[in-house]
Length: 493
Ligand code: MV4
Image (tube, rainbow, N blue to C red; front, side):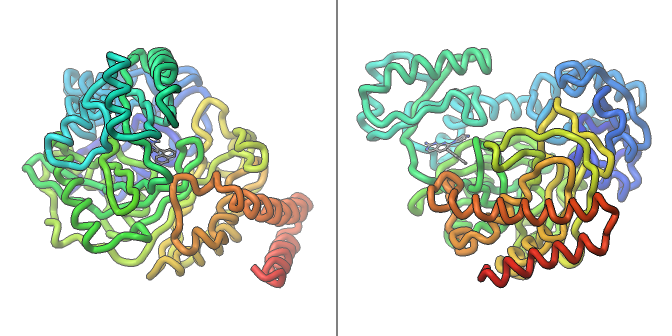
């Protein structure tokens, strides 16, 4: 079954290629779209057909809904896969696709719209019996009511934007004195960022874990979950490391959380692939939001379940019933993903776009690499700095960590600074190895110190490697890298 003859992928980089790989396996023809900044991008070369849709700024190309729909129709593509980011959670786009008779590979536009409002989705889930963080029932309109509710749930509280995401407009309020001003500021920030000033208040959970469940729902009322991912290691609300299963998961917690995740999907008439995000704190979990798209970290779920989520998305969109029931889905082994960004970890993670002058990708047992880059490729400044996703799979968590360390050792990217040294540091951090991760992990002072040392060590390794490579000494480069590695090991790490 190939589900479609031809589809358009309204995205770029590694995710566009990921979707096209599923298409190639199925025999589905692919149509790429690209901006003037992406004329030499891999996703353009990979596709069967490619159409220029505009200038480099996303608003002129990858966000140009009408142009993309027009290309789909002109090329004869029956459906559009939005990937993640760009138009993936834009309900106007999903709606326009259905109006134009092009299938949108994702949930219905009504579901996307509902989940876009944090207040509305939270209220819907509370009615469906899913635990939510205590707080205001809806938006904050009256400061005295807000003060009363904050008093009841107890300080600290957190102010959030209903249209929000990425922590924008979020503020932690330690005591009543600061509440009124924070609400005012939150509303102004939300208005300018989202054109919607609606804010709400919740109890602030200290150092929660971020645990999310992958969901698949078909158009025949069947909904299953593909277990959980732990995504607590984040920086400025950007995930850096994800793993599946969650290291602290128990059978009982998983039964309760997965039942809630299915309840969320049912309450929103969810179809296609989606992710239910929870905050976990002190044995309790709370619904936070649902992401109505394929996520960056879907890869680790694919590794531990053996299910190709992108193929399932195509099948569901084509009206197929899910080919398995919940009892047929199992989890085996452990998978970790490290996001490789072109950023300088020693310079406040500033984006470091530039040309890739040397590139050697890792491989071997248990390694999966989803990358959108190659030697000679110049990373454009207009888009996200994530250039690849390195995943390691092992029969247990320790083996996955060991394989990830080994793959980081093998991975050479020269020309731009990357988060590879940071991942080297995280994979060697005692707290991480013990599974003690939470959303404040990278901010912890003692962790920051060790990170710094590892970042410098890894940079030395890469510099040594780079110097030899630039002289054309491939063998010398490998020897030098191994020597640095051995020195590190001798130093007791
Ligand atoms: C919270 C929280 C603590 N308590 N809500 C951050 C992004 C936004 N989607 C929700 N976020 C949080 N909400 C309450 N009531 C802490 C965070 C939070 C966080 C959550 C998940 C992953 C990383 C995080 C980093 C800082 C804060």
